Image (cartoon, rainbow, N blue to C red; front, top):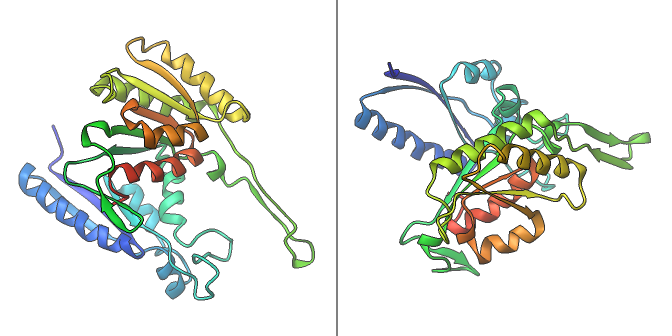
Length: 280
């Protein structure tokens, strides 16, 4: 039997994140009335501005509250540093807002970042300061599956600073079979439930990699092909990330479901958001 009450944590964060959080509460109210369910909402302040005021990026014990919740709604984090040197960072060098964002992803094993991209009628794109009709709504309907726990976000690396002067920095890219398998399988499963790419109606999964250069991408692409054998109804497509970015904006109707690694997914979904009018 379906639950009739859900514990929801809202993490407004900074800037526009707080504005988005307000609207998300309105959505929850509408869902509650329509489906006759209840939401017990707890709001937790977090982010760069909170760090400047309290010396930490969210209250103590917030990770336990998030772990116990049924749903977590995150706005956005990031606040300008008073020094003007960029966003606020903590003493350990991490961005102020790391805990509610990347910390939650890792600690709660939120392994798949699912980002739909769909253009609706009447939504215009801001180009060079003007709102214009650039893409047709019937040509923009895809979903990105971004691996969410490893890659360059694994936290392997550091800065070597003999005598207090930074001279070397490293970030190690970690790609594992386990993490790759589960997001790739999710991508194929999602393609099976969708109606196919706008151009031809074919169920298609596009694997976005840089396998002509990077070993981690070679492993990811290999696993993509292996799992694809279990889904003969779904067409396999492999695209090199840099070429994909131009195809994405010139031929969005080619794409149905796209799957990629963490860093590539972070970047390319911001680009894809332009197709639907923006991030929010």
